[in-house]
Amino acid sequence: MMNMSELLLVLAPVVLVEIVLAVLALISIFKTHGCRNGNKTVWAVIVIFVQILGPIVYFLFGKGDGNQQ
Amino acid sequence: MTGFFAYLKKELWEQLMTMKAVIICILFFLLGIISPIGAKYAPEVISRLTKDSITIQMADPTYLDAFAQFFKNLSQLGVIIFVIVFGNVLSQELTKGSLIIPMSKGLSMKAVIHAKFIALVFYWTAALAVSFLSCAIYTRILFSEINLEGVAILLLGSWIFGVFLISLIIFSNILCRGGYISLLLIAGCVGVLFLLNLLPDVRDYLPLKLVGVDVASALINQDYSFSKSGAVTCMLIVAFLLISHICAADKRKFCN
Image (cartoon, rainbow over all chains, first blue to last red; front, side, top):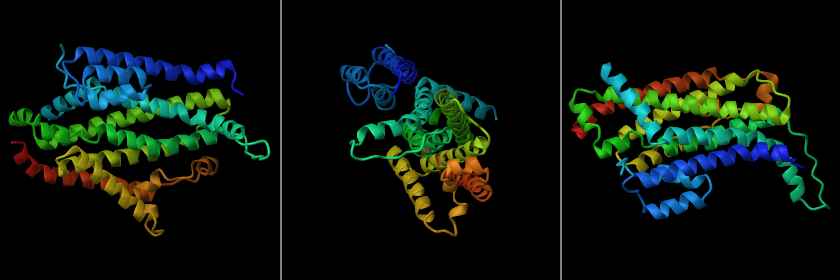
């Protein structure tokens, strides 16, 4: 059985990575002019609600060409 | 040569700014921590899933299981992630036409190929380092006991296999214009390697030998050697880069 410290050890890096990725992706969504394969709202929802994979999929397939607002 | 260094700098910076390098490092970090966690808790999870009437006897996991899981994940999931993220690194630029301006100012296609290759090798090395360090730290924490003797040679095998795939990415990107077609070509080449792997006579010479080793037994017996497959893989890397150079001579017309 996992105790509390082991659980924290397992979950802490995953949660940290998830939060950092989501924040970076949201900043990118609202700063860039437009997104590929969908609009900003759809990508923001995906980034917020799909854990870890959402921001990664956004950076690979949704991030615009870098025209910042 | 100045053009090469300038393009290499641009390439390294671009992968960082498009977040591809960060994503690769994060995914490889997760890959690294998943292996010891999986090795440690998989027996417990399996024993909880089975009914009371069925008893499954499982040996207590050790750090060897964590490393076995790590190298298995690295050679399968890690390589697939790397190819998906960086699979169209050159064909994207060729189709978008973003190479036209630097090439009209005297940058050679050879310099572009070298710069892309070295940038990808740099990020593959960084990803491998991040992944292994996270795996080693978590293994140390979860298993208390860890012996790194013999791990370096296994890591070197994985690294050479990754470099081989990078040369394959460059070769397929030069050969095919579309991003997805080049990914299919890479998958086709790896498929051919798997088919050749069925032949016992050539198995020892294939790049797959570098990552298809029984990690636990290799670490215990310290008898792992990949001189034949390593030499063949290095020759294949050079061959793919040379063919890319030859094809790139025609590609210049395509870029202009």
